[in-house]
Each structure stands twice: as structure tokens, then as C-alpha cells.
Length: 181
Image (cartoon, rainbow, N blue to C red; front, top):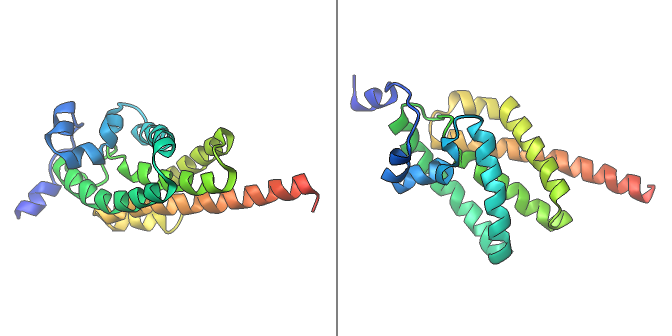
């Protein structure tokens, strides 16, 4: 068995704070510790992402925040790949960067449509978690077939696209309802 195969067949382990701080890429992949939650780490990671976005949105210009999101996607591929291999499972439940960055993209777009509206952000959160959990096509393909950092990131990017599409429909219906057309 090759070293790479041995790496992938490690027994799945729950990462510790020591693992988190052992490598900056682990810190990123585990959502700065939010992925260490013993229950619903994907949801906790998304909530962390929401809070972090709100904090960053106050102090970082929109164009810089968009650049951070794009760079975070690329960095996430590398961080998730390395961390997943170290944990013995490429899409280990404690890896939550793949929830954070796509949710930031949703919030960034939403802020340009409805401003800083907590109700719409909450709707976006619920929709994103629904699509992330159910993995509609082609997210399911990436989740099951593309076993690397890119595949892990892409299934959540697709969940984000479904969320954005759903929000666009809901917002259009709300607009037409409010304006009687």
C-alpha cells in the first residue's frame, strides 16, 4: 500500500485544539475552531461564517471582501485537501471552511440587494443549510465522486448557487406582492 493510500485509510478521528493549531491550514479548514463543535459542526461553522462576515463587512470595503471570498475559495481547496488527508477523511465533518466561504458569497450578494437585513440573512442561512444537507444535483456528484479539496468546496458552492436562485425567486415574488404587479 502506498503512502497516499495509507494516508486515506487512517481511522477517522475527531480533531483536537492541538490538531487545529498545529498547522495554519488546519486552522482555516476547521473554521478557526468552529468545526470542533461536537454537534452539527456544519451548522456551527456556517453560524461562525455569518458572524465573521458581519464583522468583516463593517471594516472591509465590499470590493476587498469579494477578493477575500475568491482567495478564500482557492485557499480552502488547499487547506481542506491537506486537513482531510491528515484526518483520514477528505470531507471530515469538522472541516467547515467549505460552508463559510460559499455562505460569505451569499451574504455579499444579498447585502447588495437588500442591504444589512437580518431577516433575509436568516432566510439565506436556512436555505443554504437545507441545500448543503440535501445536496441536490450536481452537488451530490461532487460530494460522492470528487474526493479532494476542490470537490469538498464545490458541493457547497452549488448549495450556495441554489440558495441564491431561491432567494432571487422569493425576493421577486415579495416585490411583485408589495407592488401589485
